[in-house]
Image 1 (tube, rainbow, N blue to C red):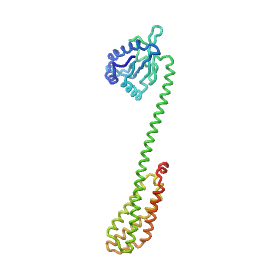
Image 2 (spheres, helix red, strand yellow; image 1 turned 180 degrees about the vertical axis):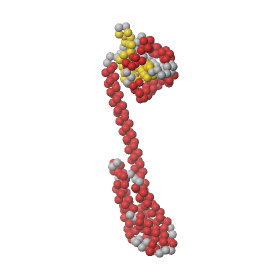
Image 3 (cartoon, rainbow, N blue to C red; image 1 turned 90 degrees about the horizontal axis):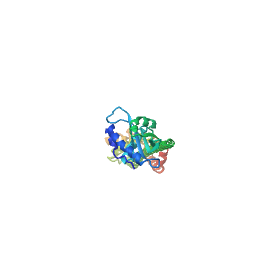
Length: 311
């Protein structure tokens, strides 16, 4: 079987016309001897819009009949991807009609025109005393192959698009998970703090406040504010699902701020009753308990998949 062995894809950039003639003459001779008739076809590749290294600016073509090496298959695949209008790939054989030998091509890939190849390659075909034409029935086969390729390309594009969409959806889902987890973890921490606020309120009522109560209350105020800000910066599906829980926690913020004010007044020796006359410790404890229940309910009802499905 004829093989493309005298020229490699990397040689194309420096290939001169004379060097190509030497190679193609050997290939044409091998084609005539080894591949006569449709029963003995061999691969071929034609590259149009080609420039020889010593003929810059002059567009021509090259044909290389013979079994393609892995390197050539890779090169052809890339050229088809870059511009299939400048490539024709398939199988060929030599036939004789009225004493004239002809290269019969059966294209499988590419869109370079046979008429264009005949015109551009006239000099080398004449040199080898060969004609160049489509094999009988090759036009229909080529059209069918082209349609199949177009369908295959469309399916590849659709598959690539689906994979991209799946990746984007997975990334979005992961981002929502992280966002939701941060909010839930924050609400759990606040719930634990609300237990301590209830204990603090009981001590305050008995006049047994501790020195650390003020700094602790200020920390809880900051955590609640951070939770509210994180909620407002979260995605709409999360906001819709957590709105009620956020409102319950946010409703405790004014009470916590009044508690901090009272503790601050007490530590400074000011009249605590005058500073926060409107603060009801019973109301504060009731609010903390309601917020805690909201967080507990959140843990029971939270359904991430349902939230993601609403996107």
